[in-house]
Image (tube, rainbow, N blue to C red; front, side, top):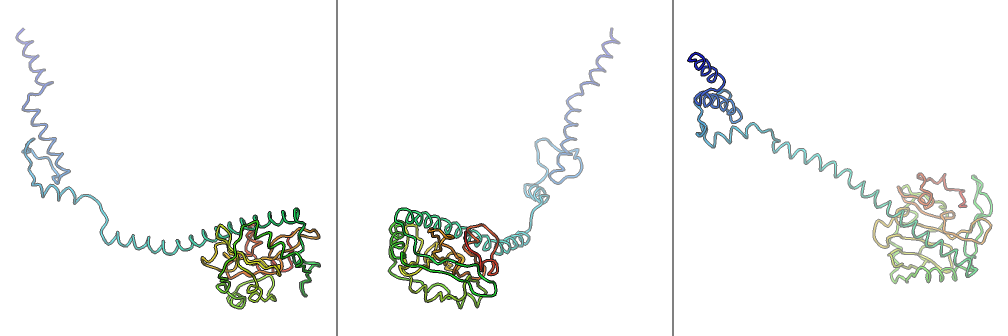
Length: 291
């Protein structure tokens, strides 16, 4: 019986170490835990309740192991971001503005076209146009026919229907002359037109949404500035030269760039905008008749 008790005691000590052994094992493990604060080997004398590093040494040892960017690296990165932004943002803003101008032109032409159809049906007015009466010979001149007998009545109806108000200060001189446009690489459907003289004879009106129209009771021309006096005030960007044109042999009229228009370098012909087509050149538009 005594032998059995002795064997059981030995087994219990083997399975359950005494408190001194447990404390020694914990101290050993805690020695390895100190590696995160600067120690690289177990510390047999580490107390569970006593710090063996000063606060300064502890913080210095801990934070010295955290990876970080230097001030120079941060400044270089910010500089690169700034350069890229300076190169790309103006281009993005320009594209956004151009798209807004194109949308505004489509809106105004939709308004004018629906009004012209109403005038044609309800008022029986259509004799204000210039139209192609024969296919142009690429080597010769285009032959057109014009009629302005109804222009005054049609312009009066447009002014009333669209709620246009006369603009006291006719600021048409803020737009580039055709001479300047052509000298800087601009385009036109008809370079023989005296755009400056024709524009000076048009009367300025403004609509409730800020669009400015240039019209005359004695002219088939209509100039639309989709954002008024705000910039850039460039032909083919936010300002468009159009003409009242007859649709085929019918009595219907519409605004087109068939007879005359100006487009500054980088701008778009109205037909290009309305058809969502590619960039047009004079070779593309000369001799083209709107259907």
